[in-house]
Image 1: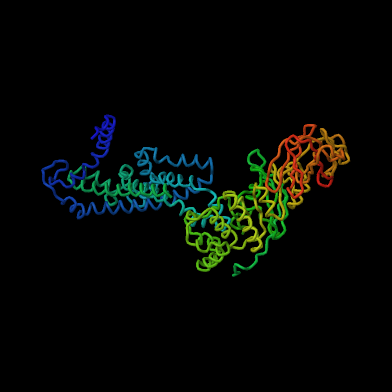
Image 2 (image 1 turned 60 degrees about the horizontal axis):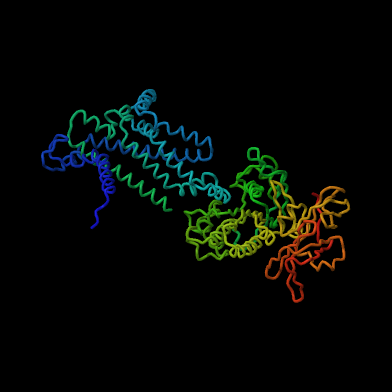
Length: 262
Length: 363
């Protein structure tokens, strides 16, 4: 057998090392979650699934999970609807549309802490602090740019002749959107929705400002527990969250591939 | 509900003073058009001459800067496209890729509130008319270019619009298929009875299909008339050059329909007055030119003596390019028949034509 060239070996080694560097800190929660020791990060050589049982039976975690799900689904729906409509409108404005779209990604650039403080003070007057609705609105602000970008990219690729054709066939603008434009943009809309979901699901900084004991989301609950009691339940939860995010990511990749092949 | 066999009455279309600018560039300037119900009008011209812009203003995709569009006596200049009830066939068909052929055809009916079941029934009928019934459930991507074209046609006439617009609908097809489709479109249009505005840059297509042709050049209609008008009585040298093969000789007007050029004199019917001393052109169609050996030349008017510079074999005809002694060139297409005298390159010949077969134009 021929020896592989040195360059190839070096490249493989570098790739593997980089992958480990990127992935290991995340993946280390998986073995930690099955660790028999009751202190997070201390291995005693035994394996257990009791942290998962605890996770499922603890009322605090259950409330947090329910909150997170409500907030994530709510802000996904809201930001997907608003973002898609915004992208539709912006696509009609030409140069101005592109300028506004540039501005609409501001929430991604603004540090979340600043957004958190701002929202907190506004929500004080509106009495939205500590409510699920308040969280949904806040996360919608954060998720909206992702939807606008994802759907806007699909719009940029959409041949405007389809809208003209629909109009010539008697479709009113909203019928055109529903019957022609949206089906053609579906991959972009779904990708935007997934981005929105993941954004809300993982959000911690803004949520810390806006939640109270009843409306803590999963990441906030994790952060509070880490500061008080360091049990491997956290690792079990981390593994679950990792799974959800990975599924969303895989779904997005599959979608992108099917869009490219279409 | 009318059936597919019902003949729709075509709509009358009037454009008056329609102008459209894009920035500083005038795309269409003061267009006036009057279409009779059921008429087939072709807009013919080079790309960028404003024909598609005119079509888009009729369809409602663009708003004219000034002027009005009237359909069957109703002004529709500002009416949105979806409320105009005009069928449009697009250059690349614009079939909805996520819908099957029959659902594409049913789309305009569903938009008009026809029930899904009835819409599909009539869509199947329309597909039958374009002989595509067997492909009804295929997506556009699974159809050939010609089949997509037929589906697009069926979709544009299924809701029985009084006016059908077609923007170079055959541009993407190969020559043979294009000729078949030309006949098919004509047959269909006659059958559904719609008024048709057809855009093309292919002059043969225009001559074959149209009742009347509007020749576009730089945003204005240079001439509007039947194929015969345009071919036999071109109003400008642009039209003469664009429609069919022609020889255009440039000379000086004598003021009485006679033009004198380098080594030739021509006289024929004038289109517009050409004052004495002004530059004038003479348009001669090559098939109207007769050739004879130079020594047989009798007349000095409508005659040019020269040498055969090239011989092009066209099958049933032979085209001679005659280089006149004065430097001008004249083309002659001669039909091959049992008795014809063939000339070779370098032969001295006399090219002649009758006064009624040439047209004198100013400039």
